Length: 111
Image (tube, rainbow, N blue to C red; front, side, top):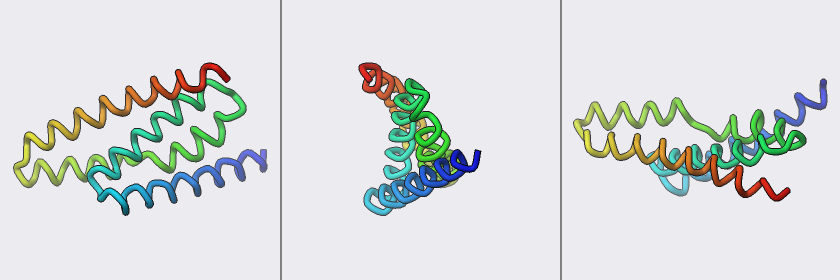
């Protein structure tokens, strides 16, 4: 049980660092989209294999995904009256996330 906590913590640390790097390099708007897409890819790949599931989904992907940050960015776009950007950004995040999860499952299937 203790090892499980340490594995999840290590994965969470890695996911947080990756999210920081993405948002620093790409800015909040697209860094968040990439972090969420990568997290979806990892969940798609990680849930295919029981051994990777704990570190990948409960650790890395959980810390990497940024639903509150996405909601905050969407709220800012609405508040600023940028309705087209709001709709595009929301749709892009949903489409990219679902596609990434599917591709993650495909990528991990041969293992």
